[in-house]
Length: 514
Picture 1 (cartoon, rainbow, N blue to C red):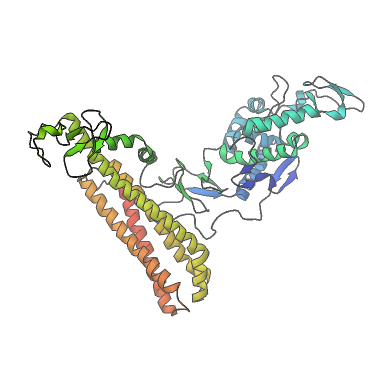
Picture 2: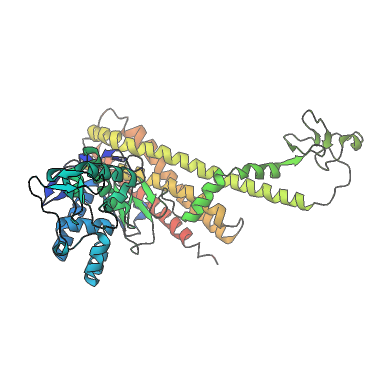
């Protein structure tokens, strides 16, 4: 996001409610909710074996945390709230580090941050009809046209406005560490002067950067990468080995690489898979594997019929035998079989054979990967329909409260997650496993069990829910509907179990097989 962007993922941060606290802006909690699905518990059933290691932060949560940190630092270090905010911006909201370094060497921290000791500073004294020299434009102006930071260096109001405007626009988030423009002066210029001397748009940008700094300055926090989402995520390392994070907006992603969640495949392998699937070099591999060069002009030629009689395209027109690459006229009328002595396989032939087999293997795994990606997208559409349409319709038909129909949402969430895992399991199979090996056989067994469970779950959703219950003209017997609820909940749990077994086995490199 560039430096003059007032927006953060579709939300004007400057419109957030604020009020003054002793010269520092206190951010209030929003009454409006800007998150996603409130019914979600933050994790898919497939991750039941992992302890939750992340926290979703909405706009109101971030603002409240910022306020809490400002007040805590102010109380513990016995500094003003303005100085507390200055420290937090400088140390990227790392409260523990501020506490440690302040009590190790307070004076050093003050100098580094720009919080000067006012007792040793002789600042100008404002009096009516007193003139001051601006240190930028060098004009002598009356006191009401002059302002100074904590250091006491005087500058005229117009020069301050220009300095603030240029800094906010050009320095981006770095404007939170703005210093006095006087040469070699390190005094901090904080939010109060930005508010009083900057333009409205400059102050809005400054607020935006202040808000964003809580997430973007931390190694523990990141924005949700889903388009349009304004939530952030705080990740706690060490609680679980999984990097999977599910935002309240419904998007599930990998904390480490911010791509979509991709268990059981590691981030490096995912990058490798994308590189391979987008690499133009694959075209060359196909050419080498499935074509041979014309013996006369060296243009690659593909054999797309059974006959060995090949004719190069104009203007070459050379006719030759696909099998031995000899001129066709030397074959003495043999139309379909090369009756000459079959030459020994050259290194080039062997290389072509290896490339061809690898490409065919890759094509198989890529086709399955792409097919499950397409199925996952279709399931996401059904999941959104289940949340926004199906659950409400079924509640109306069956007379059930909406909270009693959460099992439908969980089933579709499970289907989406299963398709995601299946998709990446095929990439895992391509990179990690050798054809015909014991590990490959175990992989295919576990994958097959999981996929069969998914098919049963999907079949129940489509044939019973969609065809029977959602198309009913009136409520079906309550006992029958309860049986359906029990069946679907059981299928969801069983499917989750099979997929958890698959993921765990692959993440452990199928250690059951030596």
